[in-house]
Structure formats: C-alpha cells, structure tokens
Image (cartoon, rainbow, N blue to C red; front, side, top):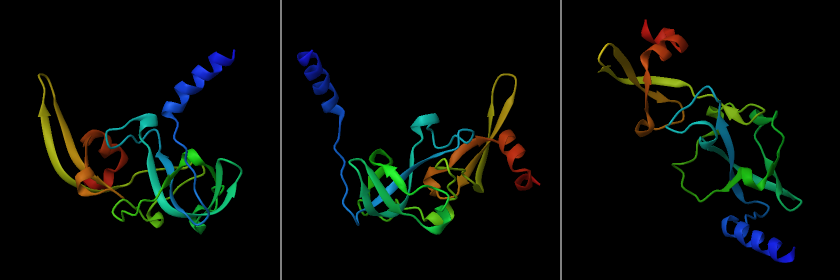
Length: 161
C-alpha cells in the first residue's frame, strides 16, 4: 500500500506547482465569460480570463486568501482559493480596469460589442455567408474576431439600421 501511494504521489508532484502569496501581494482574479458568449477562439472551460489587480489582505488557512475588492464587486465573496489567483508580474498592458467589467456572483462577465471593423462574404456552393469583424470591449484591435452577420443582427439590431 505504501509503495502504491508513493508512486501515485510522484506522478502528481510532477504537475503540481506550489503557489503561495504573502499579505500585500497583488494578484489577478480568474473569471470566465458566459457560456453562450464564446469568444477569442477558446470554448467552454478553456476560455479563462483574469481581471483586476487586487491586494491580498489576509491569508485564511493553507490555500485560501482574502482579497481587497472594490465596491462594484460587493456581491462577490472576498475569499478565494489559491487556484483562482495569478500573481501580478507588472505588465500594465495586460491589466483591464475593473470599472469596465461587470462581474456577477458566478465570477463571469459578458463581452459587449464596441464596433464593426470589417465585412466579408464567403461563397459556398449553394449559399453565401456574411461575416463581420467585431471589436469587443476590453480587447485590443488585434484580438477582434470574425462573427456571422446573422447572429449579430439578432443580438444587436441597432448596429445594422
């Protein structure tokens, strides 16, 4: 039994990374986009995002930390598991201001369309598919995505009038 446990522990230890933060460290908080809004080439559980820059104000137990959250996030409980946190390295271009993102209780947010940058039509054998290049809020122009025009007309009819 002891050798089996030792073998299993050695397999797990290869992938494990020991994360530990100190009080007054700055961290990003992991949130995910809503399931119906799939963006930026990643789908489902692979579409992770980090927001904010929050200060750790207290360590609770071995793997939990209490964060100093702004008043806009008063509905969210301030204690998070270490797996939900990512250390701030200090690159200001990665940081998205929290005022622009409305995070709900499930730590998810909805991307909002800002502008339509381009339009193209793909011709197939029997039909044509119109696509538009869309710039989303909190994203840079390089991260703009191609979406079907029909889908966007349903969600944002005021943009096509």
